[in-house]
Amino acid sequence: MKNQNSSKFPDAIRIPFFSRKISRIFFVILIILIASPLFSATHKLNLEVAQEGGSNECSDHLKFMYRITNYDSVGVSTSNLRIKIWANTSSTINFNGWWNGAAGGSASSISSCGSGSRQANQLIIITLSSGTITSGGGTWGGGKAADIYRDGWVSPFDDSCDDYSRVNATSTFYNDPYFVLEENVSGTWYTVCEYTNSTTEDSNTGIPCGGTSGCATSPIEADKSADPVSVCVGDNVTFCITATNTGSSAETFDIWDTVPSGFTYVGCDNSCSVDTSGANDVVSWTVSSLAASFSVTRCFWASADAVYYYEFNKIMFACLMNQGYELERKYYFINTCRECGRN
Image (cartoon, rainbow, N blue to C red):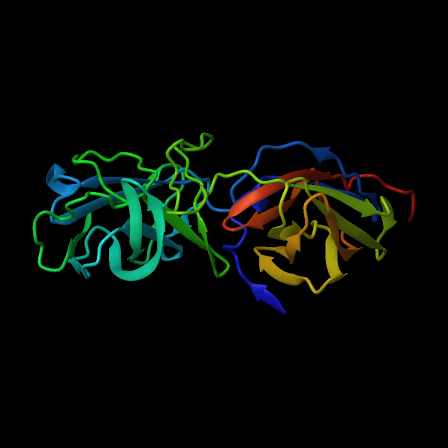
């Protein structure tokens, strides 16, 4: 079933393109594989934390302050964001107030994670009120979200001071890897690979307790092909993505790819899903437990449209997701400006 969803594919298909009018309706597809760095499926956001009044990190309650900055080229809905905090305590965790764009919070018991001075057996999730963080450096929050405390604010907060998430005794915002920002991408929460500007990944990006950074790399590699490479209007083209597990253990991941402009989606193999992002159809598959050193290929078919305006040098993408981070991204150029001499 095709779903209307504009947030699943954050910015990769919003890359500017040029168009060209042609008087004939034959065109050639030229696919060029370009090496590229890993690219997060989430937006380019940054989470900073602090404590109101610079309270001690192990005091009886946490006067939690936060600030989220959007370095992406598009606005980001706060309804798709949440903050995760990990605590190590047998006491009940309570909340007081909700300010500066924070909407609420919850605490739940979890399996113990971490070790030494950074441990947790409870997970705190803070949700945000509805709004949009503007692109190019817009911010959300910037003050205290809530007082987070245990039982009756009995001091000391934690004799052993071994919570996984502890805010330094400062009211100045800073990047802390023990607090995690998550983004909901088409119904699934992913750990954000944080950025300190539009091009630089945050070296202190959030790492979930017992988990992996949203900026982590992966052993999955991908290649793409199209057949045939020359078609006339109405002809079908088969696009295939081959993913190879170069690691030492089995991997589970998703494959996403955009149906190129100038084509209409026809079908796919292996029970794919098709979503709509803006004017683009995006095809996806889940690959479960691909063994080390093995490959898998997924294909879809699209027909050439009978229109007189085509996009060319349009950037497509195939991206692979696994446990909240993108594994690989390949870029492909589509050249649609060659004529075949038909009337």
